[in-house]
Length: 287
Image (cartoon, rainbow, N blue to C red):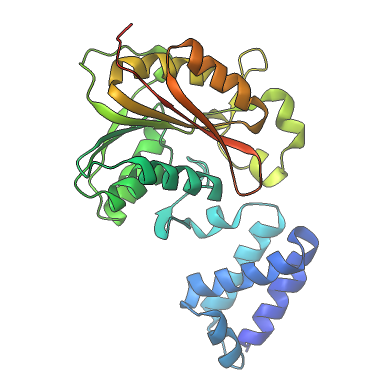
């Protein structure tokens, strides 16, 4: 019968050619964390523990999928964002650390505990759910074009005990029939151009939903323009619009917001030093 130590050795040996030594070791721990709730210390203390046949079969199937390049988050069906658990699968993008930085920025500037917040293009629901968890008295709404994504996001809201209002909406083909009521609008829309496909890792290109990733080469800011225009009717005077952006279009996105009449435009880099976020304030003159 295989021991924990044997299984770890097998996982690492099989995955090193795919993801490298350090990542393979990290994957081994994540697999055991999922399977047995073992800490890194447990992996050492319990290395001679014998595994059940069901555990061995699960590990073998998991490693086989990982060797094909499938993201571990999809294989396990879960990930973590802002310290919270999220279910993920092929219906939604895997939440990224850069998006945590965007959420932290919003939280640092949102002073009202009862703020009204809208997330456009919510995917897994990671942004609105994390915001609602930190601002429990806020009203949080989230839109997505995909009914499949909204179904998963709703399950994540239940998982994290965070009441978020989800609505199916195509931001490129919608009109607003309400008065401005939001203090914050945030979006991490599709922003990868078709040309950039060749630069993407296979585990992203082959497995994550293209609907949530790509925009035409001739209109790289199509979603930013639509959301900026729409937000002028959604935001209260002084309300803020936050975007996660393509690092190649930081200046262009800022210029677009300026042309649309926004003020206090701030372009921010992520921890890797890449242009990644933009914030702007709507002064409150409806157009």
